[in-house]
Structures are given as C-alpha cells and as structure tokens.
Length: 115
Image 1 (cartoon, one colour):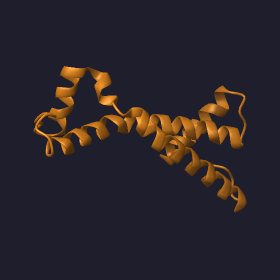
Image 2 (spheres, one colour):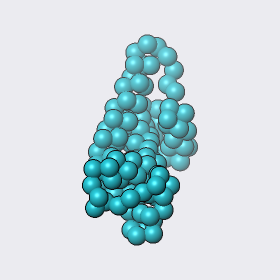
Image 3 (cartoon, rainbow, N blue to C red):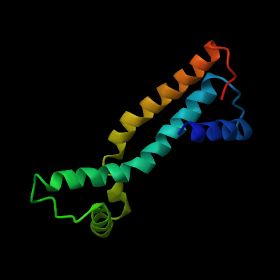
C-alpha cells in the first residue's frame, strides 16, 4: 500500500497544484483509503456471507467464496458485492489517512526526505 500511495503523491503533484506537504499527504492517503475499500469490500462481504451461513439456514448455502460471489452477482448484481462498503470505508479511510500522514510527519521529524 505504501508504494501505491507514493504513486498517488506523484500523480497529484503532477496533475494538481498541490505541493509536498500536509494537504498532498491528506489527499493521497484519503484516495488510498478509498481504493483499498473498493478492493476489500467484495472480499469482506463474501467472508461475512460464508461465516453467516454456518449460523443460519436462511442466508443460503455456498460451496466456497467463488460460488458465493457468483450467486451474489446473479441475484443482486455487482452492487451486491459492495454491501457494507460504507462501514468498511468508515474503518479503512481514517485508518489509512492517519497512518500515512503520521508516517510522513515522522519521516520529517527524523530528517528524512518525503516519500
């Protein structure tokens, strides 16, 4: 994820008037949190469905994660994979933002160049 944030920093400096500093790091880490949510939300939803099927017969019977994803796509469409995405972003967004801003500030305090 750190490599990914570095590329976001470079892209934002190239395409926007943002320069090295707090607002660049805030923007790039927020984008990284959003993208990590987009990647992990479907897997988290599938994991939750698989865990719930053991407790409830109403949820459905899935053979494995791929079968679960296939059934969700058939019955609920692609947006069904992102159920709970807002809750995941509420966890990952601030966590990623704080982590990367803190990382940059610690590098600055240690006298190291910005990533």
